[in-house]
Figure 1 (spheres, rainbow, N blue to C red):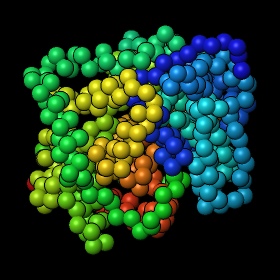
Figure 2 (cartoon, rainbow, N blue to C red):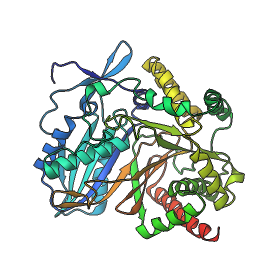
Figure 3 (spheres, rainbow, N blue to C red):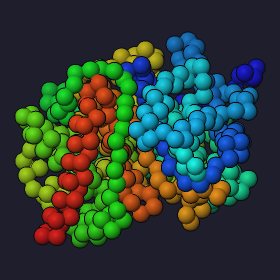
Length: 458
């Protein structure tokens, strides 16, 4: 390691994720690209090394000083980052087992970089390219931007052209400030009438009222607490996605609203199937507050909101969809998207030990860690807008594996890639069997499709 001692600051969301991280609460996520065609491992490794040198947050190790944590910048990251493994001749189940082991391999930010990359050869001209990121260093949107830069270097030997909005700007050490999220919440706040009373009301309901009326949990068939995860995935074809999009617009809703409403219905139906009643159901969803600002910063610029519904609001599909659309539509306008940022900013002023205790308290009391997490990455664009390629190889698919915190037991990630709506379910085998997890995902897909029929009759 270099003797250089420069540091890269963490913002309040970075530190919150770090405080939650432990052996049983692994706050890491993964993006796996399905590649068809030959890939040159040496050329790909060079592209990764070249790209990561532009992103200090991804070439740091975690240090501790005076009860505070900070990231120490590594000038010398070595010449080999990419790991490779050849499984030619083995079946799909063996490939998944290896990637699952990879996903569950601990990532210690005190000893290694906060990301790693695997190129798994599944057969002649068939690969999985897996990226693992520690959430305290970056979020999914910026991780995908990082992957896009690697592809550009691999394909053309250069980084993407700097866009007018700064999306391709170099991620310098100076770009990282502990309070880099605060400028993002000044403009929305100034446009909201009675902003502080609304924030106070939100916090009161979140940390007082919700403590006495916690949301229902998803039924699980096993009692274990291991932090290891596994995953299942599926997708809806382009024509099905277009149909949902067109019909939801008639009601002034979006595909995102349909996905969220269907998730509420799925959880209620799932619990009922197993003899468990559902009262309040609360689904945690991310809100990207940094899309137009600080885009060049590889760091967490995401806040979270937890819209909830009660049993009487889930009686019919259209009524639930309208309710979800109304509530999510005013998230930015009423300031709820930023209440979590303000609260975590306050926590980040305290010692790391206190932050960890508060995080554990939230998990144990179900105050903010809610029924489940639904992450919508949105439309993934890789490459230059045409068919995404890695040299002469094609990227045909992409899927994600998200963090799963103990009370959830499972989390869902959705994204649109190559016109298809991809749905992935990450679950803890200690709480759900493989068959149970697959049944839940199938039920979710059925519920999404049922909205097509409901929208036709609306």
